[in-house]
Image (cartoon, rainbow, N blue to C red; front, top):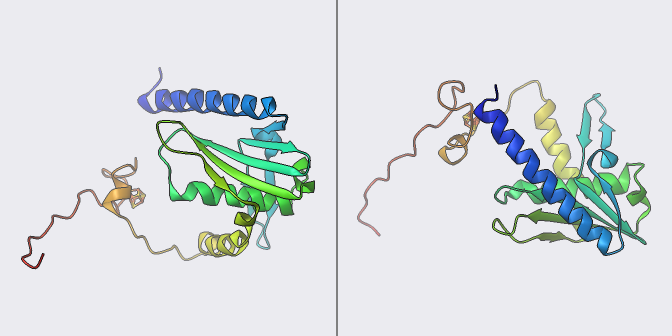
Length: 181
Ligand code: SF4
């Protein structure tokens, strides 16, 4: 029997698949050669042996231009553009993907029309992402756990709140009345 989480995952997968299919059809109609999901897998191995794997939903190639597209069915998050910037960088620098030969690698984060407007990322958006990722990976691979900085805004959406995670912030701090504004 399917649980609530399975049903939610099934619904998300169906919605995401339909969105990827529609966006891919749009690029094909515009004359692009379209590569989908597993065809776009990028794997890079760091000094310590850790492997970073990325898989953009769509890479559309025409002439010397490639567009890396990720489709989002949820609300826009600040990490969405970072994810696509990382794909752009990795595709351009390390992959064996046909996009690697392109002079311009652009990015797009596509949202459902009721969630947000498409975010367009220029070729230059990939610059600087390596330094950022190096810092993240250093924290991620460090034997010392990073300092937890939980917040009610994040924890209220997290499935580990409600008894599993000891750091969870379960309630919004009450506003204290002041007289100076
Ligand atoms: S409940 Fe725990 S794991 Fe989830 S967001 Fe909060 S601190 Fe992080």
